[in-house]
Amino acid sequence: QELLVESGGGLVQPGGSLRLSCAASGFTINNYAMGWYRQAPGKERELVAVISTGGNTDYQDSLKGRFTISRENAKNTVYLQMNSLKPEDTALYYCNAVHRIFTQRNYWGQGTQVSVSS
Image (cartoon, rainbow, N blue to C red; front, side, top):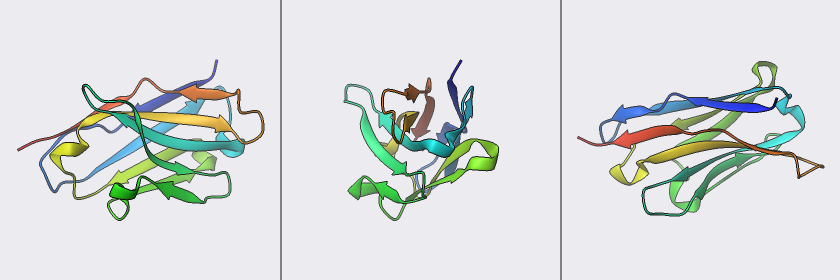
């Protein structure tokens, strides 16, 4: 069974940092584009960042410079480093995997909560 498990969320003060991890099991991420999405209460899910199989990255414009996505294929894990966090970053953060060819192979994690508050 293909699973994505996010971890690393929590409560942090404004200006703080968190590093989210997404561990895949049941498949290897080498041939998958990996992404992070988030959904705040009352809002639609939105793209945070994606990283291709070749390591190319793309970000929501408003997050460039604060968030960094990376992947470690040997550990079957993707990361999201979040710095200078703001209250508006509060959301449930989801990990996503999409096969680079067979795009119907599309998996989601259950999410990890990030709360930014003083």
